[in-house]
Every structure is written in structure tokens, then in C-alpha cells.
Length: 183
Image 1 (spheres, rainbow, N blue to C red):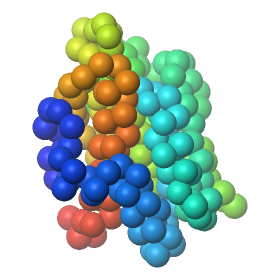
Image 2 (image 1 turned 90 degrees about the vertical axis):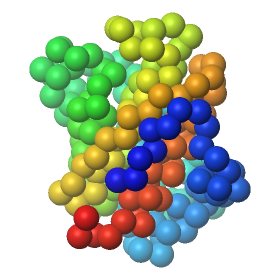
Image 3 (image 1 turned 45 degrees about the horizontal axis):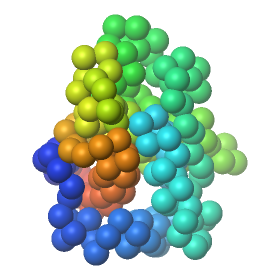
């Protein structure tokens, strides 16, 4: 996976003209490839799936989204291992990865798992949480039998961190789709 962990906002070139364009391009690419996506959110609280379904035609590829803001729901709804949550808390790379994997099954349609799962977890601020600084974000990705986590350190206030996490998650899925399947 390309390194997306640089602090601060992604450059306009890296994410397209703006996040709206990137979301439209992502929906178009998913549609062209006949792929579905499911979204699991904590930190972004529904902003990511809202960005995707804002695009006309998204219903063809977006299975849905789960906002699991409370730690218990990450386990109950998304099958995140309770031992990881007990030891590390909800802000951890393994939590993001398991959220992305779990949402693919939880939001299966017609018995078919979503082709891609994407998740967000982290600390938006303004205060640190369980020793994690504001701007600590993990994006989880799952496709096929693979799963990945992108750690980010984002700058800005609570709204800026959440908005940038959405931009980076859309960018991450677009980059995942651009990967050579043999990687």
C-alpha cells in the first residue's frame, strides 16, 4: 500500500481536484468493475458513507455503513476481537483492520460479502484519548483475503481531522483499486 501517513491535508493533486471529485471517481471505478463497498466508521461518525452516497448512482455499489462509535459495538456488530479491544482500546491498527473485515460480512447483500471494506477509527480531539494524541487515525482496508491499515497523524481541530480522515479513506480505496492484484 502506498504511504498515506504524512501529516496534514493531502495535496489537491493527491486526492483529485477535491474530495467530491475523488468520491465520484471512486463510485465510477467501483461501478465499472462491478465491485461493492461497505463502510465501518467510528471517528468519522457516518461522514464517509455520507460522502459516498452523495454521488448519484452510489446505490449500485455502496452496500451501506455502520457507525460503531462505542467500543462494545465494534465487537458486537463488526466482530472486532474483544481481547484486542480490552488490551489496546478502540484506537489501534488491529481494530481498524478487523472493522474493515467485519463490515464486509455484516453488510452482505443477497448472501454476498461486500468486495471491499473500509473503516475509520481514531481520535479527533480536542483532547487525547487513552494516551492517543488528537489526529491519530487508522484507516482499515479489506479486499479479497487481504487487509491493510494506514496509520495517519492529521493536523487541525476536530472537524478538520474528521474531514481529512474521509478524504484519506476515499483516497486509500482508490489507491487499493489501482494496485496490481499480485501485490
